[in-house]
Length: 108
Length: 132
Image 1 (cartoon, each protein chain N blue to C red):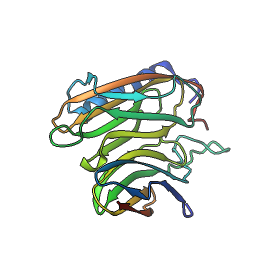
Image 2 (image 1 turned 90 degrees about the vertical axis):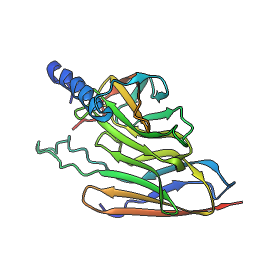
Image 3 (image 1 turned 180 degrees about the vertical axis):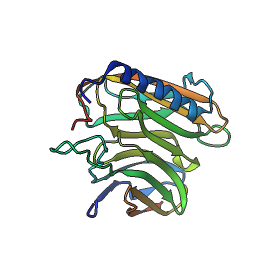
């Protein structure tokens, strides 16, 4: 799959210890493996099977995805911000591809 | 998945029960602590919002380890597994799922102390989301 584009909504600043909400979405068909093409042959499964969010190297939130997750997987979750740093988001595809994005946040 | 034979549908419910027991380590989950939010009626089964929220301080001993979501009427009942940490701040998450037909959606939370909690909602689906 050619360069799925992650989109992330996260505040630029927070106060120390604040719990913020993060929203992420990545373009991906999430082919479930349940569908058939027009000749009746099953279309092989290809989904993003894992999503992780880490802050300064420490895991914040993880998700294992099954084929029941909709196309263009969307996640909304919370994170505590102890200090300035950066959130790293990682999506792992069935074909082994890894899609990454990083967002800095400043504690004021 | 239109016209799924009845015994197959029943098998999926049994699969879900077995998968819940695998997740909880054989412990029967209690109601409470976890809230599953999903629409009563989903017009499009391809993208149904689902949220979970677990009542927890997310620090010290009062921590949520993970939450698993099942759709017991789907060809594969498992939907997603969320894992939380102290940096989660609170044990809440939202995603979007596919539902093949009208069915129960189930969320089970496992706490760090090993206790397990369950919530269940029926979602009526107008157009199934596993077509092909």
